Amino acid sequence: MHELDLKLLHEADRDSLPLGIRTIYEKEIGDSQREKRIYRIDKFGANKFVIFALEKPISRI
Amino acid sequence: MQSEICIKMYPTCKLVQGSKFSAVYDLDRRQLYRFDSAYYPLFSELEKGSWREGTEQGLEPDAAKQVVVVLEMAQTNEIVYRTSDPAGDMFEALSEEWHSPHEMQNCIVDVADMDHDWIALRASLDELRCPGLQIRCFSDLVDLQKMLEILKVFGGSCVANLQFVIRWNEELDAIDWGEVCSRYKNLLFVKLHGAQTERRISWQQFPAMMDRLVIHEPKKIASERDCGAIAVGSLSAPSAKLFAELHSFNGCLHRKISVRQDGSICNCPSLRASYGTDLAKLPQISAKKEFRAYWTLKKDDMAVCSRCEFRYVCTDCRGYLGSDLSLEKPARCKYDPDTGLWDG
Image 1 (tube, rainbow over the protein chains, first blue to last red):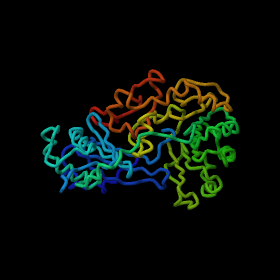
Image 2 (cartoon, chains in turn red, yellow):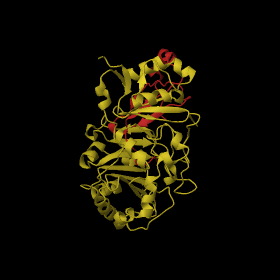
Image 3 (cartoon, each protein chain N blue to C red):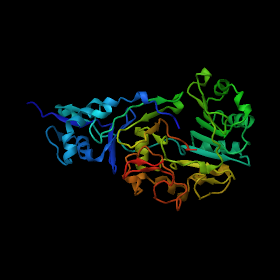
Image 4 (cartoon, chains in turn brown, cyan):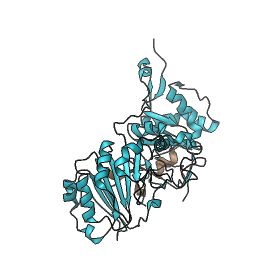
C-alpha cells in the first residue's frame, strides 16, 4: 500500500478543528490521469485514511 | 427592503447521511467532506436553504457550540454561501437521473487455460456499444504476442478503454510501451502481476504513453477470487455521474457483462449465475430479465450500506455472499459505518 507523506499534515490545523469535523489534507499520486488517486485524511476516521480513485474501476483485481 | 442573510449549500454539493459519520459530496470538485453525524441536522438545514444565523435547532449541545466554526469551514471550502439575494432560491437541485448511450458499460474477460473467440467478442461488444474491456489472465496464455493479437482485434472497435491484467514475464520488460500505446490508442492500462519489483511506467519514461499507465505488481493474481475487496483505495472520487448511477443502480454490475475463464458468460466471474458460452449472443443474453435483475441492487436497499456515508462513491461487490441477489454488505468490505472504522 502507498505510503502517506506525513509532511503534508499540518498538525496545528488539525488540533484547532472542532470535534467530529473532518479535515482533509490531500495529495494526488500516480503518474498519469489514468490512475490519479487522492488521499483524503480525516481527523476522526481512526488511524486509517481513505483513498479515492478518480475513475470508476472495471474490477478490483 | 433588505432581505435576511441566509446560508445555503451549493446545489452541486450533496448531503449524504450516514450512521456514525455523514458526508457532503462536492460533485464539481470531486471532493468528499466527512463529518460526525452530530452535525447532520445543521447540514440538512443548509441543504434546504432554511438555516438562519443564530439558530441551532436540532443540534446536540456540543455540536451547537461549534456551529460558527463549522459554517466557516463550510464557507471556506465553498460548500455553502451566504446571501441575502432571493435569486439564491432559483438554483435547481442537480438531477439524479442517469442515462447512457452504451447498452453495456464494461466487460471483464478472464483467461486461464483456454483462449476465447475474440472476434465474436468484438462483434458483440460493438453491437452493445461497450466502451470498457478488461482482460484478466491468470496463466501465461496471454503473453506479449497474444496481447498484441488481441489489441489488433479490438482496433477501431467501440472499446475505447482496453485494459490488460496479465502475468509478468521478462519479455514484457523489453517493450517500448510508448510505441505500443501510439499504435493502439484504446490501450489505457496494463497491470503485470507477479512482477519482480513494484514499479510504474508512464509518460515520464515514454512520453508517447500520454495518460496511459503500466503497473508492475509483485503480487500474483491466481483467479477471479482475488477481486472484490472494498478497502482503503477502492472508493471512487465523487462525481455527478457516479452519484446519479449509484442512486438507482449497482455500481459494479450495472451494464456489465463478463466471460469466465471456462468461457461461460455471466454478470461477473465472482457470481454464480451463467448464461451459456456463445460470445456472439452477448446482446441477446444481456437483454434477459434475469441477467438485468442484478443491475438494480443498489446501496440504498442494503441494510448496512444504506447507513454508510461512502455509499455513493462505493462501486460495491456482490460476489462471495450467501446468494447472488443478496442485499448483505459486501463480503470483503472492511468498513463499519456504525463505528466509522476501517478494519485491518
